[in-house]
Image 1 (cartoon, rainbow, N blue to C red):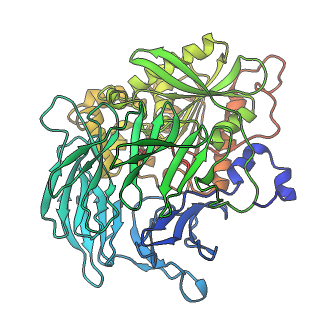
Image 2 (cartoon, rainbow, N blue to C red):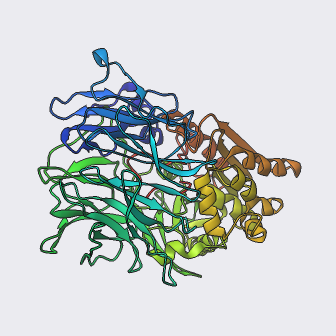
Image 3 (cartoon, rainbow, N blue to C red):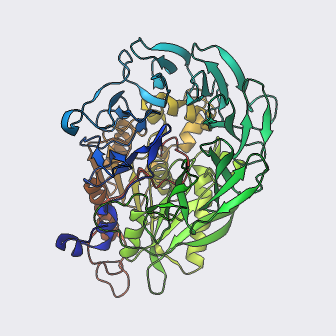
Amino acid sequence: MGGMTESTESMPDWEKRFRAPRVSLPDWAEDAPDRSLFISNATGTYELYAWDRATGAQRQVTDRPNGTTDGVLTPDGQWIWWFSDTDGDEFGVWLRQPFGGGADGERADEPAAPGLEPSYPAGLVLGRDGTAVIGRSTDEEGSTVHVVRPGAAPEEIYRHRESAGVGDLSHDGSLIAIEHTEHGDAMHSAVRVVRRDGTAVAELDDTKGGTEELGLSVMGFAPVAGDTRLLIGHQRRGRWEPMVWDPLTGRETALAIDLPGDVGADWFPDGSALLIDHSHQARGELWRYDLGSGELTRIETPAGTISGASARPDGAVEFLWSSAEQPPRVRSTSGRTVLDPPGFTAPVSVAVGDAWVDGPGGRVHALVQKPAGEGPFPTVFDIHGGPTWHDSDAFAAGPAAWVDHGFAVVRVNYRGSTGYGRAWTDALKHRVGLIELEDIAAVREWAVASGLADPERLVLAGGSWGGYLTLLGLGTQPEAWAVGLAAVPVADYVTAYHDEMEALKAMDRTLLGGTPEEVPERFRASSPLTYVDEVRAPVYISAGVNDPRCPIRQIDNYVERLERRGAPHEVYRYDAGHGSLVVEERIKQLRLEIEFAERHLAPRPGSPNGTASASASPRGSAPAAVPGTASAPTAPRG
């Protein structure tokens, strides 16, 4: 890695953490493992990069004002497919370009699937014969799956009004795995395997025949010629764990993986073993499971979070690791350096501690970071999005910035979070938002009683679902919070439902038990707009004008109500979607948030500005997860 320049040496640490170049875990072409694709913010915007491991050559693949993160390599490594939307609205088409670029390495993008109209993406898998299987979602059509053969028009093989997406394609390209929610429960998918013409081969559905709601997920076909085994994630024992299913024979093979948390899995390249990703109590670890002997062997990794892992053909395992204290790095069990970003390294932050608090639905896990000195501190409750997500012991520039400015930071893995078993994740149905806030309130009471948090200087903050919980909390717990900071939130649940993408409509129907017309009382009880006149704390809201997940109109409705009663508030609108992939924009947003909090918090004894001393005023919250550092499966809203 390179050293810091004079300009970075004078930069405050919190800004360095955002600006420090970082890279995602490289994906590699199955049949050409020296050809890789990764994401980096090296230019100040997150974009896709091609990397030839044999020569060391790297090339920037995409260059767009609002960044690009969705890309896939063909199995032979000859082509890169990437998704092109408009200013972060997530609605677009797939383009492709040669791995080496066009003439003289120039970008040479072309339509990857001519004939397919723009849509929201719902999965993409690429076959060895040039065939692509593309999942799409639109408000008009619902979910569709198309097979695109070289030189031929796209062929639709699946359509349904409910949510569905492409899971994987078998090694020989003859079988396609589709995750679907035709039963109407968007939180629990079933799996159907079909042939290329859409003919059904087999169905696996754990939502039928029992009283429990159980989901399935596609983890991938065996990467071996002639092998039709499919790795499936299931919840039959109260958590996510893998099993092996052969859709041609119907045989299911349970796996003896006795680990306490959620278990994800991927294949080793020869199909003889599985790479196990175990997430438990906000930390991650890796294991190797031998399918022949059933032996489970731990792969040594540092304590912290594994944000992605891949087994290479030589048996080495590459993984992206970080902790709350240490910035992310791509590591390998071989001991070799895999991929270092150029430039300076992000400064370290403070380690995270654990708090377990008795809540109305069981023990609630919270992660705590605090500055030096004695409390009580002004404290930010930084609420994660999703809701099917969880905060973990992973490096995050936003919380670290608050700590640098003298704030304690508390992150709560409320009911609805992943990583604590199926019952915990599924607990928030019908009383959506209110259940999560009960857990947050229990942790807030602990934080004050323990001497960590100053009860007069509590900040409720979050992005996406966390922004929604922030606005809902300010209205339903108005005496508890001194300031609210909501990024890309749901503010008016009814209007949000009518304006959001179709997949989120399905999720909201599942969470609340119907549409706003069918269960108006539930939407009313769970909508921040219902309680806006009770809000007493100053409110800061940031919103992307092209956001399809938490659309701008419903935020404007909420802001209009604040304005009508003269409630103190500020609104920042930016020209992107559900968060930003531009580093300077993230810094700007966090700086605005911290300045707003410092301006409105009660003065701290002995401090003229109301908070602990700070060398600079921050900006830049990142409502969307930084590519390559996510700690949980992709969330509905994020």
